[in-house]
Image 1: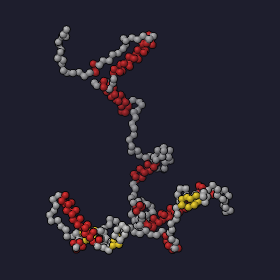
Image 2: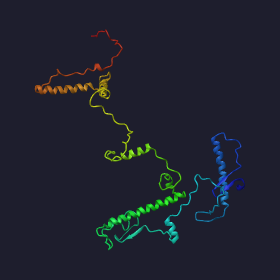
Image 3: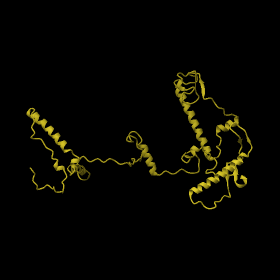
Image 4: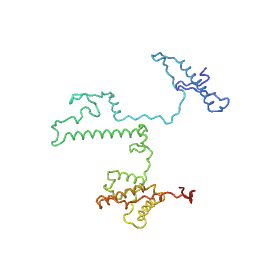
Length: 329
């Protein structure tokens, strides 16, 4: 009954009702959500009914069934990845019948008589653990065997990197680059793709050259300049210092700044900026010390200053109600 009413695809665990129609359009979003949940529950129940009708086998976790092949073709955002072409070693191994076998990670080292890693840090047969290398009859006198070993190792690493780039080039020709390289495929020189990389403009080259020139510790001051190389452009703001000699233009700015500071100090509300009472007290203390030194310890209060607080008070326009009246005795 469920198969006749709904279209059930067990391969994708999906069900669809082609005959469903709303009798009347829902008036609100809550009604639409409620109706969709009710009809979705019926579709899930139809999938469960057909699923439990399949032949099953018993397991310790419960009955297990094998799903049939899906009947609905779902669209893909991207095409299927193409198979990667075999490398030169894989072709050679297949021709010779060589099968890949898993190697153990730990290997016994005869020099140190301990188990060590096959590759990586503190590996087996490490050149750093060999203090003495026996000379061979074919060795030329005066050659350093340790330097020869380092040279051979560098050659093996370079050869392996060359083979890796060759394999990537062959994979790019058939469009089967690995996913982590596809993002940078247009910028790699080994891709072999049809699309040409974006041409870099002259300004971008100058910016990159300027960044590279100023990346040293001295900011490119002591680096050798290429023939025809222009100094890098500085887009940042420079600090402006006032000139040492006063004159017109920038030379008069120092006087303007000094007058601005003095105007603030001598303004109507200057008592909020300058503590006059504290300044007068400091002057009195210093003058008393000078008088004591002159008179041998005696101090006089005639030269003392008194802070005039009234001059810093704001004047009021209101007249006093007691003006003109005498004091009562």
